[in-house]
Amino acid sequence: MNDTHSAWPHKDLLDVTQLNGEQTRRILDLANGFREINTRPVKKVPTLKGKTVMLFFAENSTRTKTSFDVAAKRLSADTFSLATAGSSINKGESLKDTGLTLEAMNPDIIVIRHQASGAARYLAEKLKCSIINAGDGWHAHPTQALLDCFTLDQFWRGDFKNRELLILGDIAHSRVARSNIHLLHSLGVKLRVCAPRTLLPAGIDDWPVEVYPDLEQAADGADAIMALRLQLERQQAGLLPDLGEYAKRYCLSERHLKLAKPGAKVLHPGPMNRGLEISDEIADGAASLVLDQVAAGVSVRMAILYLLAGRNEDKNAVA
Ligand code: CP
Image 1 (cartoon, protein in one colour):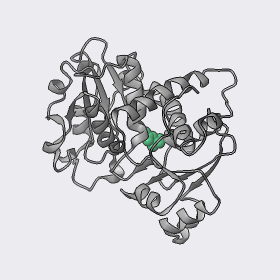
Image 2 (image 1 turned 90 degrees about the horizontal axis):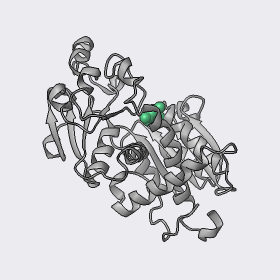
Image 3 (image 1 turned 90 degrees about the vertical axis):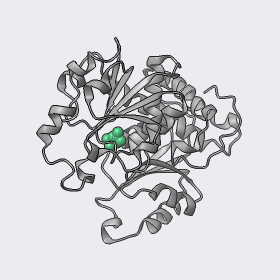
Image 4 (image 1 turned 30 degrees about the horizontal axis):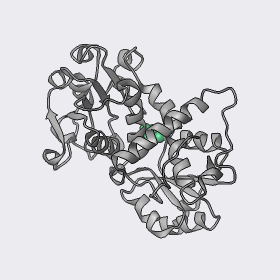
């Protein structure tokens, strides 16, 4: 891989807030290079041979866990998975002891998803190996934001300035929204959000976003729309008294997309609640980038594993 920059300065990837513009661009450019590997008949390079990546997923995942596993294996790293089900977490073992136990087997990187905001940082402060945050509570999902940014970069051809992205749905409980808003704002994207008041976080007025209660107004003239999953498992009772009413007002459909700019695209981080936050016609339609996002996840995660695993090495040893 052609990456001639200096050593990567970060031990861990905990949130996009730790990345400057140059570092974000470096991840996107590297991911673009790794994308080619993912289209080859033999999708494997020896870049991380001998490295060990542990996937510690205390919360459910399809896309993030699988794509980290695929990314590590395509770079020839060894991977091992731990989930809450079947582990000693179910016997009461603490996060600290679980982390120390995994580190005693000498991994290079632990990828963690956890229901507690701050879990990844907690482990990063305790362990010497690199920690990648694969989603912690409502707090952050940095690799999702980077893959969304990569997907938009392919579509917008590197021109983020003054593009308008609408993020629609459950902003309050969304780590995806938090990470995307920070990252895309830092690149010059103008952010709109649309949700019922009960699904907007306290303090939204201090975020770099324009708030729209009405989806038709919010979609009008947008360059792209990102629908979010309703995080029903994280919501307190009473935030949404009637899901049918929610769908009537906030489910993204063709009539909303027609109000956006011609050629506007639709993103969703998945998993989707079809008919609730996004219609079938949009999810499966020509404007949908949902599966491009999934494919981007492998390339972007390859780039992140490469940078973290290679940060203390002679560059030729991992290139
Ligand atoms: N977008 C996302 O994090 O999906 P998974 O929960 O399937 O990993």
